[in-house]
Length: 119
Image (cartoon, rainbow, N blue to C red; front, side, top):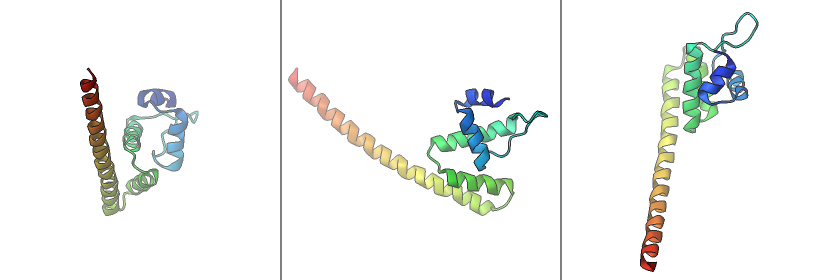
């Protein structure tokens, strides 16, 4: 797939895809004889993984380290710990979001009661 096709498929800009490759978030994408990126299935899996992690708020630095360790086929324990650390961060965010939603639900409920009283 061309970078344009991948961009469309994953709803990411071509600049973002190039940036992710340049900083090591996506391993180097194979290129054709003219030097044009040719995203194969493996490259697309990486794009999907990185998009999922970034959409969830996983830190770029953690992902760069994870990808580098994975490509070097080293640091199995460290790779696992990176994922555990990021999961813990997301769980804290989830807890905060849950508390915020509960607060909003309470406030909305109060407004609904006020509206009902005015009728």
